Image (cartoon, rainbow, N blue to C red; front, top):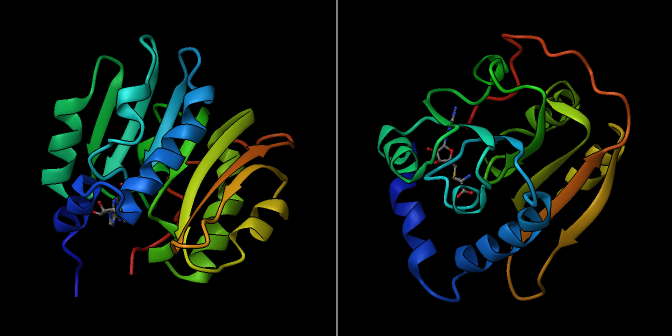
Length: 191
Ligand SMILES: C[S@@+](CC[C@H](N)C(=O)[O-])C[C@H]1O[C@@H](n2cnc3c(N)ncnc32)[C@H](O)[C@@H]1O
């Protein structure tokens, strides 16, 4: 069954909800990174509320979202320099115009794809990032996402795991040479 991702977003509007709290953590990691114009990718961007309000003028961003209603909401909230693509975030192709980016958001992705796809996606992130580029990611519950980042040349700059909520938010920096960008590489399929 396909989830109703529009309804899923409603939880953001409930003060103190897990999703509202997660949003503040994600924005807390993003704010210092967005201290000047940046090039940003958001995979499975939803309505883009995590990054769009924080983007400094002069930034460029590509947000990729499958659901047309959510993509339309993101487009309505987007300023100059932001491209919202209604389509599949699970290949490298939509990132052609922006890669390499200084920041990649993978929020609400790893919990909805297979373990193998999580490994494959993280292993491919160095082809989408500038040297020293950062990834902000989320995942509900326990997983070895942090170990997979470590095994692919990333350094952990932040990790939030509240005792009273299932969400986890991580911030990792690429600390090895990036890989060249290649179009049409499959990263993941949403399950
Ligand atoms: C858990 S939500 C996360 C949304 C947003 N990143 C956030 O954290 O608020 C997952 C999103 O992925 C979108 N999605 C599912 N499959 C996708 C695909 N193949 N390509 C792009 N977006 C996809 C859904 O429509 C949904 O908006």
